[in-house]
Image (tube, rainbow, N blue to C red; front, side, top):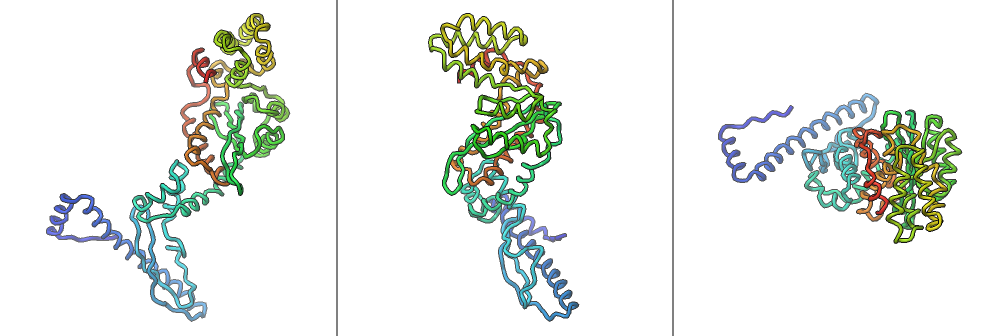
Amino acid sequence: MLRVEVSLANVKVGLERFRLDPVGGLERLVQGWRAEFSSALTQLMDAEIELFLGQQKQDGKKNARNGYVVRTFAVKGVGQLEVRMPRDREGKFSSSILPYRQRYDIRIQQDMALMHLGGMSTRTIEFMSKRFFGRRLSAQEVSEATATLHASVDAWRNRPLTARYEYLYLDGTFFSVRRGNIGREPVLVAVGVEEDGTRSVLGFQSGDKESATTWNEFLGDLLRRGLNPDAVQLGLMDGLTGLERVFTERFRRSKVQRCQIHKARNVLAKVPRRLQEEFRTAMTKVFYNEGNLKSREAFSSLKEKYARLCPDAVRCLEGDLDSLLAFYAFPRNEWPSLRTTNPIERLNKEFKRRTNSMEIVGAEKSMYTLLAYISMRMEHGWRSAKLGKRNVVHLNSFEIAITH
């Protein structure tokens, strides 16, 4: 423990300086603590090298001290220090307190990575690092700090899926990724919902979202990690090519729920503009009703009225009617959350919000690290908003949603 003694006269002088220049007063105080901190580190390393040389002597080796080398080292909460590091003649001593080539506290490295993942660019952190950490850090150092998280992210992405997930939300989204050249690439995403309504991001994988083969491999990976296929009762998705077929092959006991908002947009695109408003009202009654039977009665009325006026739209809706109304087989309080893929769309929107400012996400591992961070942050918010606990959505909400 450091012990500092000051006289009353010095205290009076110091207080007056603080009154006239509070920022400067604090900086002078911190400078004094930095000197004490540097001295304490040097003393620790002096003791460390003496222990090292003592062991060398016991091993019959002739070695001795060889002065000091001055180097800088930044410590979180303290700032940049000048430290005298002891050396030995044979150059074999390596301090465990200040490892060779390490120029800042490991906690600063962790903070840099979190700041970057949280939304700050590498250039912004470089610009602000002197004020934050007491040492100017390069954009390359920020990137290297983020790269240290890759192993942890790989472990998280490949973690065992031991919980029982009743519902799976599946979708894909695009990012600009650097693989030699820069190009937009899709990423497949899966969100699982447990029996108590807890949501989790089960995985994401780079790959063609329009490819049945890619989806088959992605779902196979979830199963290899322990996802129980018998527990899954419903898969929620939009009309991605081949996904529904692959899903039903992998999860034979599960139903498929097509996203009503995506389908509504597809159907309305086939309706003449002058009829869209009344068709939308009729379609809303199909999607939002008291139960499966009432919804099918509403569709029969829609078909009777519009089969001749809008045949393509009616066929488009009728072809997926079973999967559009599959949610009725589940608890009523969960219907609002099971009609659409909104939960995973919200996750994808958060992915986009964070990555749009970056223009280029980086290489694949950098992309996965960023998406893992966003996923964990989203999961934290989901803990207090479990599926099935939301208020029932009114018809007007749906009408607004499908028009945008």
